[in-house]
Amino acid sequence: MLSVAVLYPELLGTYGDGGNGLVVFERARRRGVETTLRVVGLHDDVPGADLYLLGGGEDGPQRLACDLLASSSFAARVADGAYVLAVCAGLQLLGRTFSVEGDDEYAGLGLVDAVTRRGLKRSVGELAVQVGDRLLVGFENHGGRTTLGDGVEALGAVVRGRANDGALDGYRTGRIWATYAHGPVLAMNPWFCDELLEAVLGRALEPLDSVADRLYEQRRAVLRGAGRA
Image 1 (cartoon, rainbow, N blue to C red):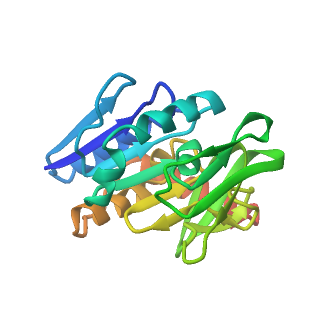
Image 2 (image 1 turned 45 degrees about the vertical axis):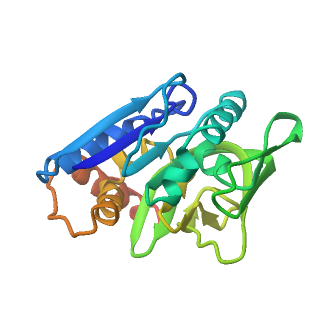
């Protein structure tokens, strides 16, 4: 049994990131993995889960989500072995601090040694990231500039766009994976969903032939043809 929880999509779902939960559920189900998917609302307790999903959101909702998570069992459940995929605002609030409107600094959850400050200009547009030998594609829309602490590994190297700082995107530390890519990122990059599933399940998965997989290959071909990957 695989349990998946999408946390506060009312706050952290501005760009459809809540759809990542549906992608995980469906790709696991097609492999015969019994899976439960729970959408956690503002007034719900954070349930136990194998995988938590955090999305992007605006400054006010991001701060509220951080407060709710800080007063919940979320950090303890991650310490006990749960996995996390965090996107954009979710990425920022897992760090030590993040900056919001007016450059005010706000305490994050401190689960990752990362700090996000306001960038000089907003990063908006197509995002492509080299993750190992695979290309992650999506789009970004954020004003942050994220600096990783010593020993924190980035998710990948930026091919197009800005992400953390123009060179690196996100981070992968322990059981936490994070990226600035929206899309939803797992819908646009089914290989990334499968890699995450394999980590959570602790075993390899057979390939799927789906529309999402074929669309991903088309996106990658377009980027290569444009000299971006």
